Structures are given as structure tokens and as C-alpha cells.
Amino acid sequence: MKFSRIIANSGEWLSGDGPNRQIVVSSRVRLARNLRDKPFPGWAKKSERLDVMNLVKEAVEHLPEMVESYSENLEALSPLEKQVLVERHLISREHAAKGVGSAVVMNAPQSLSVMINEEDHLRMQAIRCGLQLDNVFKMINSVDSELECSLQFAYSAELGYLTACPSNVGTGMRASAMLHLPGLVMSDQINKIINSVNKIGLAVRGLHGEGTEAMGNLFQVSNQTTLGEAEEEIIGRLNRVIEQVIEHEQNARALLAQRKSITLHDQIGRAYGLLCHSYSISSKEALNLLSIIKLGIDLSVFPDAHRFPVDELFIETQPAHLQKGAQVAKMSSEERDALRATIIRAKLSQVPQPDIARLRLSIPVNTENQ
Amino acid sequence: MQCDVCQNKDATVFLTQIVDGKMQKVNLCEGCSKEKGVNDPTGFALADLLLGLGASQQIEKSPTTLKCAVCGFTQADFKKTGRLGCSNCYTVFADGIASMLKNMHKGTQHTGKTPAAFHKVREHNEKIKALQENLSKAIDAEEFELAANLRDQIRKVEADLAS
Image: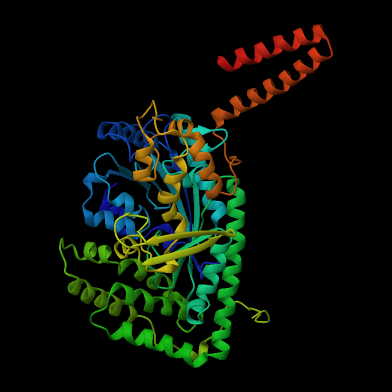
């Protein structure tokens, strides 16, 4: 399958449906695995990396899940193409920096992707829409079990799966959910939530993982520890915390609608106005305003039919996607900002003006514990 | 105060984070704090950063001459990268790693998934262990006929595993 065909469609996690999808954008589980007694990618010589890559790539490409797949060595991808994959969360920023000796294999719906020779020999992930970590884990777990037949993974009875970094040892699993939390941000409760989630040993991060800024009111919640707990326990713990955060977000939205309705109307109206009439807009500003539009859709201020086009804009307005779409190799940031504004204006012209009178909360919530 | 990352410039950013009731502290210079994305507290987990630092001091507890026979990795390399060389390094540097893992994770014993190939090994090991306990009991009780029988069983299981 060609790169152009892969990116022509948005991933299943964006277009699909899933539980709690108004607040939980996506659920993702990744497993780190290594081959026994082969130097980890960061320590291996080029020839050793190539050997491992060929071995692993062959095994991954033969998976039944990968019948229709896209598979490429990283040196064959342009920096722009790599960035497109990063923006879609199909490879990590670290992996995008790799060249000869690293590869990526993903299935056509972009729900499964395997990074070969990232920090570990294999980093495989499954990603789906909404809150469904259990299903996502099942998906990636069966891939792991199939690969285990053809590859000998580094494993010890005491420490579990052995990884390049001791912080991943054990299950080698990082489960995460991307949450859209405009209510908690607007009501200044987000730091309180982040602190309490951190306190129970879970990590909260920005849009693109480690060390990135939170934009568009999007936050990733994931497990920090990987040893001493079974996969199901980690996911169970994560699920319980995420469900709590969802409840807090719903309460925050309800409270805003009841007690600060003018502020809320004003924010939605301004976001709509700015996006409809700007001729140059940065990626950060666009994401933050689109987040408010998305909230507006959740609150029925905009028709639900526009949910997918708006969700798509979150990805389409990212720098590499803009440039790829325009089919230009080089673009200044001024040109990108102008093109971004044009694309957003075109799409938002389809969305009717906010109808504040329709504002309602789709889910009945209790505000007693606030 | 020196920066914990580059060990070169003066630290101007001081971070404290409490995870699971344990306090972690790190001091950084401006350059390193930007590089690690510290300027945005919401998108930042101190534990990730601490790995390469506290971790490298921990592993020093094992003798400095240690070198992995499989991949040639040494302690100095770990200090530099915060990553290990290969899966065998976990055995070579086991002592240093053990205390590090204790601070980093919920437990020190893996309780999650086991590759199918290891099921058999684990079952056999458990069986042998049980038989050996019975054997020493039998010897203590001077039931030598039973002991001989158990010894033969152990040999059989061991031969089974080797095949």
C-alpha cells in the first residue's frame, strides 16, 4: 500500500465511534518488546539494527492483521511524511528522528502500528475511538501472542518483558486515553485534577506525549509504572480514574452552563467568529478555538452532523498535514498560517451560526458534589 | 547549585513532584529545562526525567568493572544514556537495577503476561520445586523408598524440560 493511500483516509480512531467519545477522543495501548540477547536499538551497531529490523519486519508483515498494510523503512520517508505520521499518533516523535535500521508497519484502518527499532526492538500500538482500553488491549495482546510464535522475546520470570529503559520493564505496557477537557480548563479546575491524577501514580501529558504542551484542551492520561501489576489491573485502575475525570468534566460543563452561561456563550461565539473570519491563524490558536467549537457541538449549540468535519480539522490543520495537502515541499510559517485559515473558513462556512437557545447538556449530571 | 542534567551550568529551575507519597526533586539550568519541556508543568512527568539521573547513581552500587558479556555494555554507558545495552544486562547489573526498580515501580515481581513458551518452563520449575520439598521431607522422615521414587520423578521432569 502506498503512503498517499494510507493518508488519504483519516484513521479509524478519528472517524469511528466509541463509548464516551464526546470527552474521550481515543484510547491507546502500546507494548514494548525486545529480542533476546540482541543489543537494544540505542546500543546496537548499524548492521545489528538492520538484522533485527529485517527479522522483525518479516514477522510483522505476515500477521493476519497486516494483510492490508503499509510498511516502510524510515530512511525512505521524507521528514514531512514522518511528521504526518507523528501528527496522526502512528509513530512517536522519537521514532521520526530515526533513519536507516528503523521501520514502521501499520494496518490500513491505522488502528494498529508497529515501530521497529524505536527505543526498543518493537513498540506496537493499537488505537481506537472513545474509551475502550480493554478492547484496545485485547487487540494488541493478540498481535503480541502471534508474534511470540516467530520471535523470541526477552523475558524473565521475575522482571517480565525486558526493555531498554528500566521504566518500561514488566508488562512493557503504556495505556493511555486522550481526553478533551474544555470544561475543566475554563473553570480553572484542570490543575487540581492533574495534581490529583499525578498523586496516584498516573501521568498527565499534552497532545503529543512526553514533554509537550497541552493544546486544544487535550490531555493524555497514562500509567507510569509497568512492574508489579498485571496488564488488566493497570487498565482497571486507569479506567476508574478516567471515569472520574469524565464525571468532573461533565459537572464542570453543567456548572458553566448554569452559572456562567454568558461567559460560555461568549467563548463559543468568539471562537466561531474568529475561525470564520481569520486569514492567518497559528496551529495553537486554531486548536484552542476548535476545542471550543467541539464543546459547542457537545452542547448542541451546533448540529451534531458537523462533529466529524470539526474533529478532522484538529488533524488537518497540523503543520505537516497542511503542507502535505498543498503538495508543496517547503512552506514558510506565514504561508501555513494563511492556508490553515483558508481551510478552516471553508469548512466552518458549512456550520450554521451558534444557536445558543439550543444549549443543553446531553447527559444529565448531578452537581451536588461540587 | 549545579544542573543535574548537564552538570555544567548553574541550576535556575527547581522542581519538586510528589508521586505515591514519595518526593522527587530535580535542579535544572535554563537550557536543560527547556529541552526537557519543563516550562509546561501540565505536560511533564518528573519521573521520566529522573530516570537518567537518580537511576545512574543507583546502578553505581554494583562494582565498576562489570561489563555485559553479550553486548559489551558498561556502567559508564548507563550513566550516559539511562538505557541498558541488551536483555542480558538485566542479569549482569541485577544488583544495581533491583533497588532502582523498587523506587520506580509498584512492585519488583512481574505478575502480568507470560509468553506461552515460558508457561512450560514455569510449570516444570514449580513441579520440581514441589517434588524437592517432598524429597527433603522424605529424607528427614527416613522414608528412603519414597525418597528414591521422588528422586526419579525429579530426574524425569528435568529430562522432560531439557528435551
